[in-house]
Length: 483
Image 1: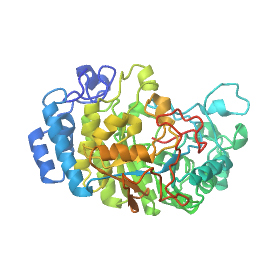
Image 2 (image 1 turned 90 degrees about the horizontal axis):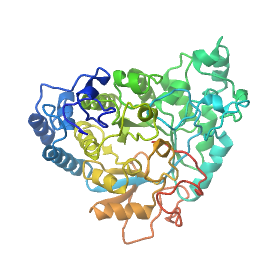
Image 3 (image 1 turned 45 degrees about the vertical axis):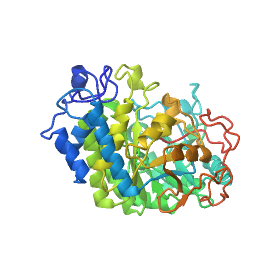
Image 4 (image 1 turned 180 degrees about the horizontal axis):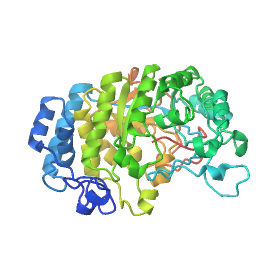
């Protein structure tokens, strides 16, 4: 199986950006080719010049003129990115003390890369469909966050399914219910239809925004769901959410920001321009946002480069993006894999190149994240030498990736972080969600725990919890997570 070069789409023969000619044509995606050369693109990257989509395509492919990833060229790209990282952000590796508390797995969107959701019909009060999903009312969300604050977290991340009973507020419930056929027209059924009422988005924000915690929630897709059936502007929606306690918005639901790819993997989701509009609305409402790319399924390296351009252009306009988070596609339990569209996710070499090219291309985004949840410890550490400078967070619960087939655990202690980061000669730093507050950690002053949280005093968060556990017995009581 090839894993790069001029062959275009990921797919049943390729996994990642490789495969044979059949992959490139399976979805009528053109085999990537540019009028640039790899050598010129690399020279521009080394000189710090602003890269074009063609440059990024060549670097991601290690040259589109030949198939496969060239190992020597790959190392040259990684070296350039690591040097850029050192110049721009230094040798610190940051991480946060955070909790993932997702409200519901009920969702009817039908994305083919996802195994997190459960059909919303199964959650109805009269349904006899068995499922492993959940819906948490606001009171339960509040309790989970309160408990987690006591052990030192200071960020709660919440990304949920698009439950048909979810509405922004009571006015929104009235608007949606007034449609002739709200279930089919605006994906709405009233809360009394379901065994558990998820509350409104504003109620959930208020419930989770307690004790000085930083609430990171409401993706563009969720913001669309919170305004469906109305003419409300995204800025107004995010403004109401911010008033209810939202502090920043995750730029997930991005997948690949090229509509021909979205037509294949998530035809029921918002389009690229709507994703961008939502992020602009969040920024206009005064919120920081993040950015992501979920890659390694059916897209080509050219699509990845186009996606990076969308992110960079958005940052040029708003300046609100705090970090870029590459999300390696986990394939095992997803519909794309079960239906034979793909037979794997991206290779490690592709992961390294995505991180490296993101560092080189996104010259206006300071921070690039490596994921131990997606990649495991050893490969995650490798990505820190490819241009990444952030290493996620303690998580305390991780369900989206694990339900898709991820194998690398749901919790990481501060001692784990200090050990891994110092092993590669870098400096471990506890950070706030927005990166504006930082605390360098002395490796010799252990055991280590968070100190930035409103109730944190440096005590280890879960001293008896082995890393990589299955999430049961979690001290915070959480049961789900965000990518």
